[in-house]
Amino acid sequence: MEIQKIDLQQKEMPREWYNIQADLPKPLDPPLAPDGKPITPSQMEVIFPKALIEQEMTQQRWIKIPEEVLDVYCRWRPSPIFRAIHLEKALQTPAKIYYKYEGCSPAGSHKPNTSIAQAYYNKKEGIKRLTTETGAGQWGSALALAGSLFGIEVRVFMVKASYNMKPARKQIMAIWGAECIASPSQETEFGRKLLAQDPENPGSLGIAISEAVEEAASRKDTNYALGSVLNHVMLHQTIIGQEAKQQLKSIGEYPDIVIGCIGGGSNFAGISFPFAMDKIQKNKKIKIIAVEPKACPSITKGAYDYDYGDTAGMTPILKMFTLGHTFMPPAIHAGGLRYHGMSPLVSALVNQNIVEARSYHQTEVFDAGLLFARTEGLVPAPETTHAIRGAIEEAIKAKEEGKEKTILFNFSGHGFFDLSSYQLYMEGKLEDFDYHEDEVKKALKDLPFCKGN
Image 1 (cartoon, rainbow, N blue to C red):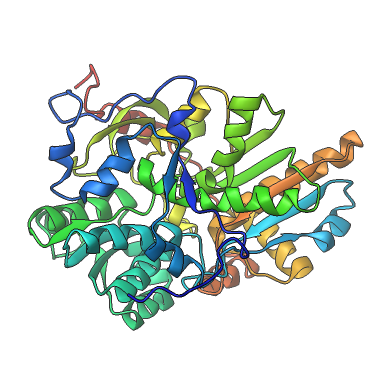
Image 2: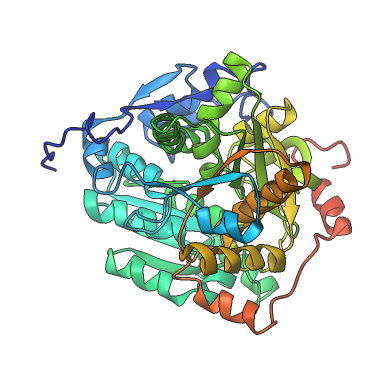
């Protein structure tokens, strides 16, 4: 790929990713193999390139971004930051609300920040094919884009509930040359097993991950690419928060509150980790809030324990907040947040009281998304509306307290592929789901090292 000659400094783009592992007050618990021993790099090489495994495990604070990756980033980065003045007026709040707009990427979300990097490292090590999972389709679209740019074949297992609700996502993946398959599918042994048990299985991210990992592990020319959860994915996304810090600094601002939605943790990590660094290193008085759906509340209702990242138990065993890898979340429209677990890094920050979490029903977040669209003009993805709801709540709180606050949230993706979800909301057909406590208790009994097993 010919590198475009662009003045990166003039474009104010960071040239390094930030690795928060270097600054954690307490180090991460290591990922484990099924035997309970720390997993080795060689064990991970079955599905990941060596460069990403090194990023997964390193304690180095700053990781240089390859020129080839920066060249692609320059097509839309740095992403803009806006002040939501009209939303502020509607809320009659003294708070200033800023949002980092990640919907300007070709795939319409923050996901290409890591898909481009992952495709580059796999291409460099001679990999011909990549498999992956996707919930709402943002990650599948992003990897399809990256595969197209780097000449890598991509196969995407998309959660069936979202596959049926979001047909446009399948089409854009096809435009970029990727194959999209409804999961659970007949393509893998695990998928066939689940469909034999329940032909109407709506799928989950955990199931889709299992299928993608199974296929990747069965072919030497194929690796697996994950769109969230793992450390190297969090690393790549930190370009978001670094840009935001620089952009706010240029106008003399620094946030009191930073907010992002969470499913696996990547967009939240992207906006928040560079600010968490200030909180850890400089004792900055900043509130960092992670927002999740009440229907799948891995942090607010889950256990902080070792669990598999997928339903079949094929991934490394990670220390994280989890609802149990066998938990089947309801088919909410924020498909990207329907995941049983949480990034080990995000989980550690919550566990160490650096980050706090809250949860909302889908009707109240769609209400926030509609208000945002009608005041600021942009239609947010259902996932993003969770962050908007959190920002609105904090702005109202500032009004009640009579305090000026500066709020920053990550606008993780636009909602132009999700208009059918908005239609259902506006017609009063969206249903709120609470998590089922009994189902979670049952799933937690299946944790790999649970004494009840």
